[in-house]
Image 1 (tube, rainbow, N blue to C red):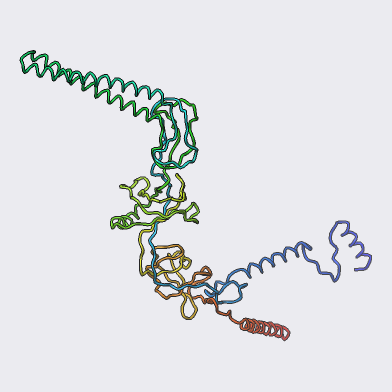
Image 2 (image 1 turned 90 degrees about the vertical axis):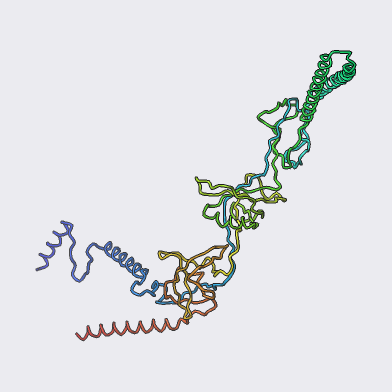
Length: 438
């Protein structure tokens, strides 16, 4: 093709907007965008390949972890023979043994208040005073009636004695004597009624002085000085709550009642601790007082009451507490830390450390737990070493590094790396040599 024809072809291509191929230049279809997408796909593929665990060998870990069957550092503990205390945890409410709303028993004006809110009072202490004048006057009136009727009775008795003398002399009729005897009995009944009226008036007068029926702590005052109060009104003067001693009512499942009743029937004293809501602080220590006489069928639980001295006011009425009931102590139990117990599809198990620093998975049957210890019924013997830290990275037959041991020297891995690199180099060199030879 001559120069003139080539120029005509280039000009026509430029007018159509098509790319003009240049001699000696390599072009990628799609341009720079295709290169960027290809590099991104390659980077993602490399990352996925590196992060994917090698499932070909059971002892192989992540490639980033550096090799297969590497010893993993773990924490260990010994299974020992010891005692475990059987305890029960429950939710309880602080319940006072007595809570009394002090109400007036007679009507009248409140003329005196002798207490302050929150005061500790004793049984019989005067709390308030209702105007006693009307009740004192009523008492004086019935006392006067009693004195009058007693005088009439005395006169009737004198006449009866006189008539008895006359009847023996046949001086009066028998009817007169019988009438006088009836009059004496009538006067005696009137006197008894007057005595009862006097006692009633004395009681009402005493009720005008309002006293505390129990020893306890006073609440907020519910009436003010000068108010008119009536007997049996809905609101009282004040509420008194007994704080010492105080009880906690809690419930336990019906499945656990057998262990408790076995100790109660054996006259055992069961200690009880009360903890705060977070179960971090022990508030008080007391004793189990009584067990209810029936199971609540709606909840399947049994109510129990524990008594606490509460001498320092640690417990407050209606306070929510966590109860720990100590039932009995189990002796000669195989005990391991609770952290050693693992749970999986096969049930509960532990990793036991063998003499060759490998671990074996042992299925265990658990017993009673206490704090951070737990009893093992089967699967572990006293003196066995179990893993308590790092068990989530282990599997059957894995090698472990015990506390205090030095990690393996890294030169072996470096030597293996150099040998593998040399092998790769030889393979690549041979391939390249073979290519050139061909």
